[in-house]
Image (cartoon, rainbow, N blue to C red):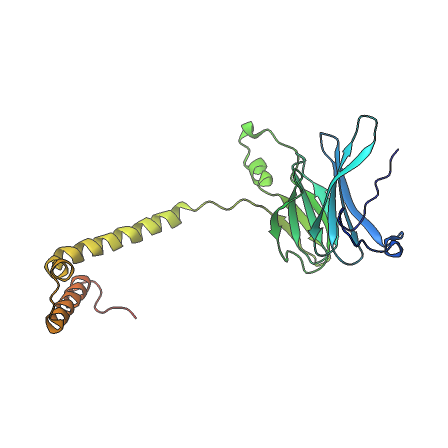
Length: 239
């Protein structure tokens, strides 16, 4: 058997904590897990302060080597779980934040801040890969979640990195607005084409003449948008 010595500081820290602060009861291993390649992952923190995530390699002779150790959270981690495909770790800290960590390089790929009001007491990650050929809506829904967490604040959180696709109703509304705006622009250009071309391609050097043409163009644009009196449409420009 082997014992992994998990320490709450960086591997190359020139000023590690004194030994008296690393005694039993002051250093807490908040969780561990291993992947299909024989790598072991641990999360260590003190009762206060930062948490550190380590990646260990198990050799053929059962020798253990710590490959990497990174600062993963500025606050102590209180819960940890590895995903079923062993590609991510989900961590919950005492501030109620959820971290999704890649087991490839121990980098945080997603942070869900302030999910809970109290320290996270339990967390689980997505299950192993499922057979998606059945087109089961329930399976699809559950696979969308990266983590489910619980806390003493009586909350159960379902968290996903996926963004919801735009609804067809929203897309249809945007297209309708775009069509209306293009119609208004085309109508205004058709009615005020002469004034617009005069301003752009044949501007007058006389400031008074230029102001007159510009005023005429503005009046034309407003007239092309507003409906004549007694007909349906806009009667004034909304403020």
